[in-house]
Image 1 (cartoon, rainbow, N blue to C red):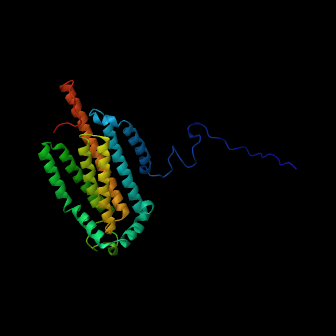
Image 2 (image 1 turned 90 degrees about the vertical axis):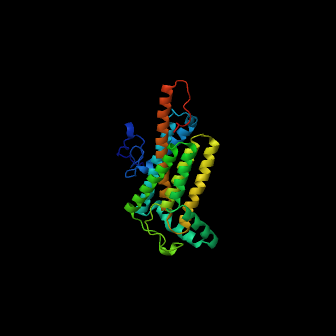
Length: 293
């Protein structure tokens, strides 16, 4: 016997702009997928493109650094919103909060606890603002230029205000008292980590403002390594001492990256304007890496 051919016609192939598109996807984006989850891949491509043109960072008339700053703002905001979504939905990264906290509490030792308690105290709201104020005043007095110290101070104020506001809006409770090194010593809300926001903003912005005066690959690597070590130390201390969850410190770092991006945009736009004014007033002169004053 021979099977009769089916009379059902084959499915019609799509044509036009929708051809080859995966079911349930529109323009390469899943339905209901938050916009901020699309930002990270795009930011990565933008950073790679900017890195290919890194030689233009020395040119104050180039807008490459401004683009990098905008990418940092978008990337920091996207990561922060992604972590916030995970906290509210109790999935993704938030699913690691309790296991990481329990593991660190079980691994505590007296010597490391004492050291990280000191680190946490130095980078807290009682000491860090004094360090920032002294650093900004000393920097401005030594260089006779207040633009960069003023940017650093403004960045710290903005990051603090954003952190305090987000804490009040999200109102996430701290980890259980039983996990804290000193139970009850922290009475504010948990998300994001203020210690991480403050330290990361200070190290990132200070490192950028120092590096941009004489940008080189070696000094960039040194800045990234030292800044990363400092941020990891402070964020790790807050986790180890049981005062924050993993998502708290991650969100704090993301906010600091967004603030750094804002500083880069403001600083480089000023450099572009100053270079154009200098070129217009004194043709043939070099504007330099950064404007005076």
